[in-house]
Image 1 (cartoon, rainbow, N blue to C red):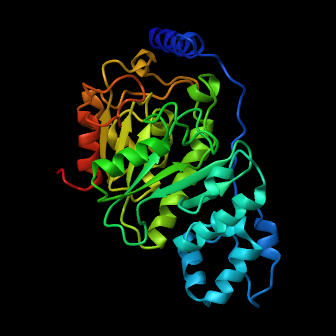
Image 2 (image 1 turned 180 degrees about the horizontal axis):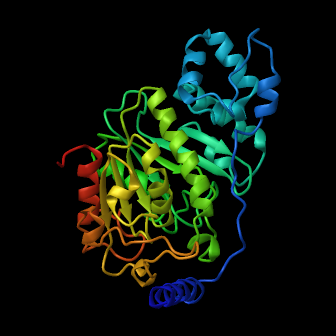
Length: 347
């Protein structure tokens, strides 16, 4: 009875923290975008090249990669022209084709929210206009990269906000650019806004539903990187993104998983994550995430604090980072540590 009472109190604390922490408002529930890429039905029905196309819902990224390897350049270009939304989001498809397909898909969407993404200099590895929109952008050269990092963001990130400029180090695009600069361009970095994130701090942020859907998408995305020959990635998981990474950990081949500003990873210890990756954790002394109770009860909360010594993660120094989004700010010890992790310069 005492244990149940403590759990109920913890649950109440989570709800109180989520609903009433300074200046936040609960938000409308989000419906996760799941399943195969847009246009998959038309893709499956197309016989233009005289052979079946791999089913985006069931083909593995490796099967997709083998399929494209067997096509002529003309056949590949035909599929890009006819099915840009599918090719641009098809994990395992050649990287350069995905860039080309997404430029076409963004232009054909005629949506002013996404117009900037079609600029020729941008390397858009995924673009899904459904819901609030999802996008992944590559910084650097992915095809021949010696090291690859993936930024997995938290709440309020979508295709329209993933590169907003008013919070440069609180967005996946800003984090990616800063990390690449800190490694002196020694790593390719992917800003991955590839799942439906919570909006505001409400029940979506306090529960794991969106994270579970995001974990499946992240696992497949990293499978796709492996299928095109990219090295095992380092995952940098910010805020609610660390919940996604915690749930995906056992199904990715990441070399390292870094949780920063984390509300928890849906695990009590590193061993519970079921991964061979090295697990790191960072939290600065001014991060408001420290006010969120690290509990999990009746579906609320995300469990243990990854920076607690009992969790077993390697601690990333972050004493000079500021707030919840300052970990990638130039000159911070956290960014220097991230760069070393990204390039494999730590043991």
